[in-house]
Length: 264
Length: 264
DNA sequence: CGATAATTTGACCCCTGTCAATCGCGGTGG
DNA sequence: CCACCGCGATTGACAGGGGTCAAATTATCG
Figure 1 (spheres, each protein chain N blue to C red):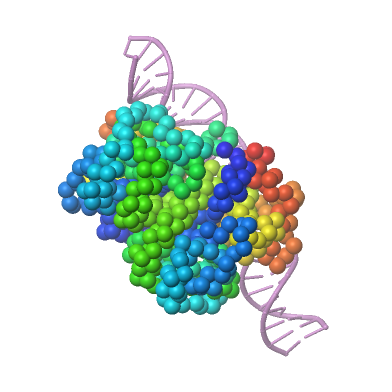
Figure 2: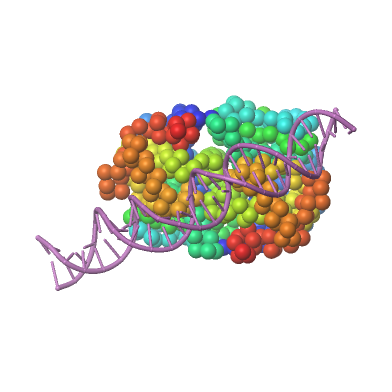
């Protein structure tokens, strides 16, 4: 199935495209409906909270703590006891697994509206680290579980989020397993654009706070290879970099076709 | 974190290690406790059903259909309307994504006790195809959703299964993204052994019904590369193939260390 | 404006993909 | 019972994509 088809399906069904152990709680807010600020955290994204009625919101709103976070701040470490769940209110984070030789695998990037660190295990399965300035909202695992117990609707929602995230990770697996360098970078950019679109931002010009090395660690490539792919994509007119950590995608359908291998 | 550590953690927490869009419904059955046949499907694995009381089991037991399936049988296709959920009672299946150039990415293998085809989307996200003879138990999506609605405990269970599956897919991503051929094959074998252990089978000699090509499509390798890795592992004494689609792993800890890159 | 980090580009080579031939095993039919 | 057939596995030869090392250029920030 062509990536274009997939993208269309994603657009149609309003599905997320990037992978992870975290889940998105901003999904229930359709791109067209006006985002209502969440009573719990004040975010202009619906989500888990969208499954709660006013009483429920009231009940858990005093159980959360908001914190400002900065680049390189670690939200949690792999192996740490998973005592809290983090909702990312603003900023971009990466989820990584460290390898014994010092390299890392980036499992995915996370944006405003995503849930990080939800797990049924005792400990976190990855590191979570901020790439930008931002703000997070922490809720203790006990309270989170309590919310799930008291509001069954939030469970259904969590299943949705989790299963969507699984689909995204599988898409990532296809990218890393079967595409070559330039296709991988193209697929990554499509994923980024999709994430922006989902959050109601324009998706032809987008923020890209991650370094070449981090993109490489996501895609299973050396940072130099990522750099070469970018210059190639820029030469071919698929990508522009106006500076300031921005990328411009003049022809997203063509880029998607390239990622899929339909274009040579 | 060394793979050994991960394996130990998995052993401790009884977690699954192989990836997917399907989820395992045989988890609640600890390796030590005697597996009780499931009233619904007769399987000697607990699981989703373990979250149901007798009344619930009674209620859904007439909503399922059991079918014998054969090698190459397709359980469902990517894109097909997801009208039913499949529980794999016996046999081995693979989940795949087809690429436009005819190649495929294997997302993972599935064994007795796994749930296939559960999704919150309208359509299946992958193909599911049998590798062996087996038996499946189908339940309509409506009835499955109904079960979730009537028995909240099954929701919690599904969240667990889904989040575990996500963790496995992430592990797979690390394997494909950052390890080289021989390490990938070693990691695959560890995953297989882990799956066998979880189902209460011996994990030093195991069935391996998949071809080199299918393993390659899982690991992002050419089938020839997989073959070379196997001969290498056999020469080094990590693997024996007594024939009959069996593999023997004389030193699993060493194999795990190799997969992790601790061994050269 | 200096210092540090990020990116780009080049050179080189190794791992792995590709193509091709051979081997081995299991099944089938004479 | 054995020859034949076909699929999967193995092995070899070769080339290319991308990793690695290194240096130059640019961007970022105090």
